[in-house]
Length: 362
Image 1: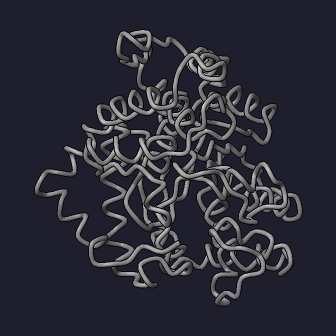
Image 2: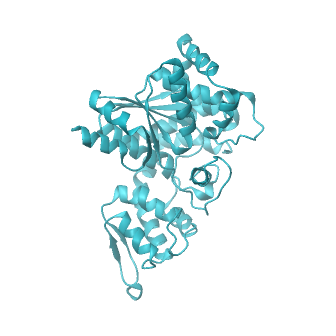
Image 3: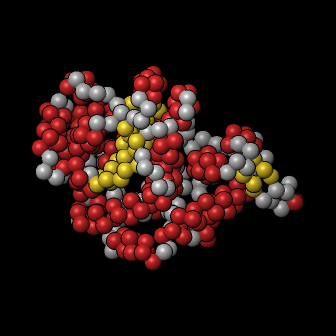
């Protein structure tokens, strides 16, 4: 595969930010199989954002020749009180995450899925790195990074939660990655790591930050970032802690259609429209042509060959919100069905039991 194709695969949507594009180009020019990593906190059921949007970018990077690692961050989840801080349940849930990504990404020899604690057990080298990173940053700097764990700077937190940024940064160092990948909500710790890398004269990975899929509710500002646009993306993202805003991979066809029908989707409004975001992020990734069926009296069925075409038609009122929602509900039900059926198998249903026993919190 030629250099430009590999760079294009890494940069294409759902990537929103590359730090830096020049470094990415140089990396692919000099390394046939860069080491990639992305970490996941273990909490509730996988949804469109956590599995599909993230999975698309991992798929892009695998195609570009990267050796990809998914780190299922059990200790991070423990620190952040997922599953009420029950580490055993967190590790049971990690098996579900592993199965979901293995199914979505397929059998690829360049893909590894590991537990975070696999890095920590009897590993003096890891904790040496953890201490060096912690000594290179201030408490104020750590506090500004707490939004990576879904926490606000002014929250009253356990001391352990202040260890989270150093732990995440230490993972990057320990894995010796060339590309660190995360959602836009994780960019603060990536920027922190690059600052630490300068101080400690470490290799600086390229950082790829991917789009945060919008939840189905009206956009909000909740104070997760000083940048209003990024704050809106983080505050309004599809989240397991707001189940009414999320479409899970286990939702039935009727549940999907019902959730989409209730989504925030004002007529002619394109900006921060979650239904259009699903079209851009999911439907046009899966389909070359998106058909929306309409009654003849409303103009009959309409075909869209690209997202920009759909957005343009919607913005000028040629497509009604209700017709858009119906079309999206039908398309999503079809797209999600294979992964839902995979987890309907008896051996995989057992992986869901831990979620039924625990209240999911943020």
